[in-house]
Every structure is written in C-alpha cells, then in structure tokens.
Length: 346
Image (cartoon, rainbow, N blue to C red):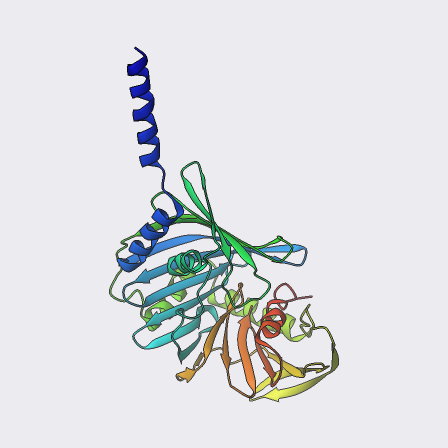
C-alpha cells in the first residue's frame, strides 16, 4: 500500500513537471512562432495616460508575410481613424477622412516596433537577458525592458496566452506608473486576406464608403459640419501642454502656408524650435515618396525628416502640425507632439 501511494505521488509529480514550462521553453516557442509566422489579425483597446486624463484608441493590426502591415488607430470617442500601411510600394500614412496620404521609404517597423505588433513583443522578451517570468493561471507573463523610442517608457509587462497569443501589455515609467496599456480583445494566427487588403487606394476609398454607409446624414449636413469644425479650429491657437525645461515661448505670429492661414509659435532657451499649425482648406493631399522615419505618438503617427534641421510632421483632428528644430532631441520632440493631444478646442 505504501509503495502504491509513493508511485501515485511520483506519477503526479512527473505530470506536473511536464505540464509547466520554463522561461527558456516559452522563449523558444515564441521564437519558433515568429520564424514560422505567415499572418495574423488582432484588435483591442490602447489607453494612453495624458496628464490626469486617459485617452482610448481602438487598434486593428494586420500582418501578412513577408512584410505587409496594416495598422488602424481609431479615436474611440470621436471615431476618427488613421492608417499605417506597408506594402511593396513603401510605407504609407493615411488619414482617409481628410483625404491625405503620405508615402515614404523606410524599413519600419524593423527598427521602431509598436506595442501592438506580435514581432515587437517577442523581440522585447528575447532581447532582455534580465527578464522576469511568471505564470498566472494559464497566462505567461514577462516583465522586461521597454524598447521603444520614448525614454519615459522604462519597463513593460507582457502577457501571452498559453497559445502564445498576445493578451495584454502594460508599459510603466521610472516611478512604476502605468502610462500605456494595450488590451487585446482578439488575436488570430494564420489569418486570410483579400488580394487588395494592403493596397493604398483601396484603404483610402473603403474608409470613405464605410463612412457613407454608416451615416444617414446628407452631403450638405456633412459639409456644414466640416466647415464649422474648421472655423472652430482656426479660431484658437493650440498650445502644446509640454515645454522642455529651460525653454520658454517667445511669441506667436500669423503666417501663410501656401493658400492656408497658419500660426507659428517660436520657442527659445536651452533648445530652439518652432511649431507651425494650420487647417488645410484643400484637404486632398497625395505626397510623393520621401525619405523619413515613422514615429509613433500613441494617438497618431508622425513622419520625421531631415538631418541637421529636423522636421516632425503630423495631423490631429484636422489640424496639421510641423515641429522644426536643429537641436531638440527626439525624445523631447515626441513629448511635445504627444502633449498636443487633448488640447484641440481648448
């Protein structure tokens, strides 16, 4: 009887040991997933802490081997979307409701991954040799460094399901305060796509068709709302909530940017930079291909160009921003651009 009891305990221990995986086992499986990755679709909600407020965005991400990407960020409150697309023709930043598209040559997202990309999350885990690993019921949880371009993001907690699907990401600052979260609502490996799902023109026009189908307003009503929105935006200057230490605002002046009215804000001190903001009246813009880097601002994407004189260019709710500087570090440029969010209409 005693021998039988010991045998039962031994078998139970073996079963338990076989059912649990070490961090190295999980990492090996994750690396295999990336190596054999054909496609995936995911969606969820990303929350950004901006001061005392939380901004939420619906995120839809598609990937198709070898290097096709489609990411759509939608303001959950205002239902305004921006799409980043990568196909054989290059990388595109699309703002369909403004009929704007920019194409540029870049190896994005190879150098600058995002919180909602499976490859980026796996890379964060595999590259941090000081990573911490734990299990939570059936979930696999890693605590690793945050390898993003924003220096405020210090570490992150990445949770995968036991099928290695991303489930949740929490990014913290140096004080262990949560500043960005991504909650995946669904994720599917080996997804199928239509032939033109990653086509730039299709993504521009399909958004417009969906918008028209979902709206019962007449064209005159829509045009009237757009004109009223432009007038509201032109009536006030949008001041970024963040200013680098040692820098003060020097003045605000009106200017012309082509046929559009614009406002220039000049800053000086430890750093010198200017911000030009305008609300283009001619909404349709299709830019030729240019060299640049894609910068994730959380609520939108910006294009960074230039070497000695850098320019960060982005849109937020119909307003076009250009931040120009010769000495401002990229971290500070990102912080300034991020602080514009939530200032519209104030």
